[in-house]
Every structure is written in C-alpha cells, then in structure tokens.
Image: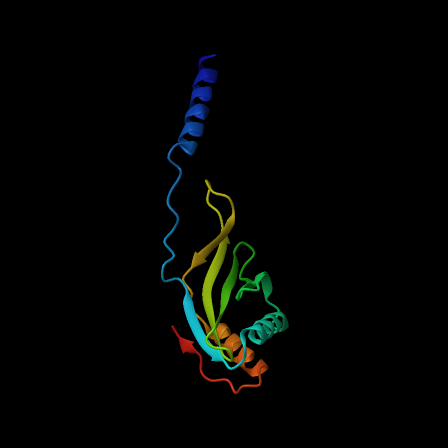
Length: 154
C-alpha cells in the first residue's frame, strides 16, 4: 500500500513538473535570413506571373501565392533518416515604377525537430548559402527577356 502511494506521488510530481513553467520565449531568429534583391524591367503583374512560373519550373513547393506580391516556397532534402532539412524562400515583389518591379528573396534554412515538451515542427536555422536565391532572381529576369545582372545582396 505504501509503495503504491509513493509511486502515485512520484507520477503526480512528474506531471506537475512537466506542465509548470514549461513556457519559454521563442528563439530569436534575427539575422538568420540572407536577403537578395534584383530589379526586373517588367510591370508588377507580368513579374508576378514570371515568378510563379519560375518557382513551378524549378519544382519548389509553393505554400502561398499572394496576389499582393508574396510567395513562400520550400525546397526540401533529407540528409539522414532521422533529420529533415529544407530551405524556405520568401519572395516579395514591389512595384518600383509602372514598368519595373523589385524582387526580394529572403532565404532561411529550416530543420524539422522536437523536444520532449514541444510539438514537432520546423525550426529556423541560420542560412549559410544563397546561391539558389540568386539563380531564382536570374531566372526571373531571364524569363522577362532581360539579360540577368548580378543580384544585389542585402
């Protein structure tokens, strides 16, 4: 009887410890992204269509297509059986004038994981490479019939 009470008390303490004070602030992801910008000599609507076409041709998973000028696209790769990685590209379009559009791509690396006290999910990690984002910008410029220039790094 006494052992059962002690076991019940230990389980109760473990449950209370697991739910008491577990909340923590989100990880500061400032500086995790790499930003690349280029100007396309095409109106906003044409650039939006070109960007959508390039992302589809390159095989990215489009999470969102916002007609106001935002695309969120993912490319994923598996490095091992236990760890999933992907890269998140946030492509923003802004009309610089009636005939030019500024395209900005933010690149962030993500890792799929969980801890004992959280739900599984994608977690941002510092991006180290942005060559794919530069290739995207050059492909968008080329789609418009413009000789691609070197994208600006921001």
